[in-house]
Length: 156
Image (tube, rainbow, N blue to C red; front, top):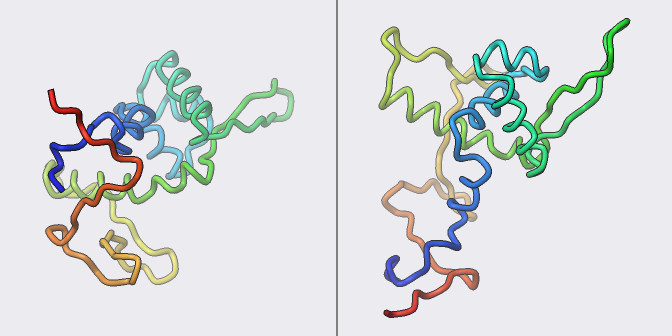
């Protein structure tokens, strides 16, 4: 297989980026993973404009990555907070990969700002590639194989 022989517009990465490919979207997901769910808390902690936050949250809800849940504090009007759906929770390895890459290639002056730990034993959490048979796979041992959804490019 030659990668250039196939159309790039059916790429799953490109389709994912249509939903996630924005700085604020990824940072909103980070906040949700870290337990920040209320609009005002998201707005304050991120420093994003209310308009941008509203649009990004609405988009994530429409895409099924985030769900809106109603709540009411005593004596206050009903409001919404935001929680990851199953689809949204599946993005955790993506955010861990971005965090790891950022720590390695764009380090903060004082070193990494956080460490991800396993709640049960306290060991550091990291990502590894494994195949469906459970073997650990090195990056250079991964090959791309076209499936029925791939389309050959038309010569021209």
